[in-house]
Amino acid sequence: MALRKLYNEIKVLKVKELPDHVKPMLSIDYVKKAVQRGMDNYHAKYIETSSIDPLLHVCYGGMVLSYLIALPEERRHLEHQQHAKEHGGH
Image (cartoon, rainbow, N blue to C red; front, side, top):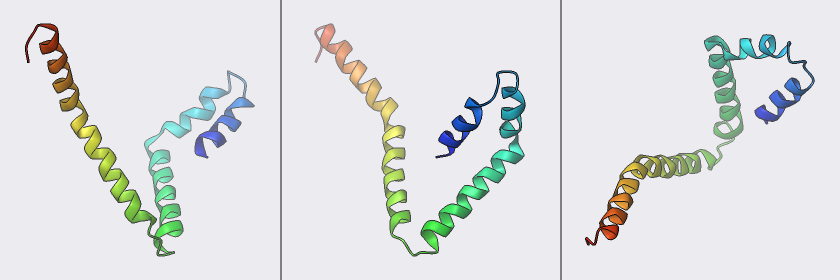
């Protein structure tokens, strides 16, 4: 939704106006405020309503994180396996 909002804001601007519109969004203070708003919205939507969704978010996030951490090792293993197959190894 945030990207759609940003896109709708940007598509009506002229090219010369774009840097002045985007530049404030790239500041550290703006990012901190945006993250805080997101955390407040998340808290209001899930925590205050005693929803089970945060538990699912943690579980899915943990699975994705473990996959991303293991991915480089798995790729190295696959490359080694393919290299060995090309050169007649096991």
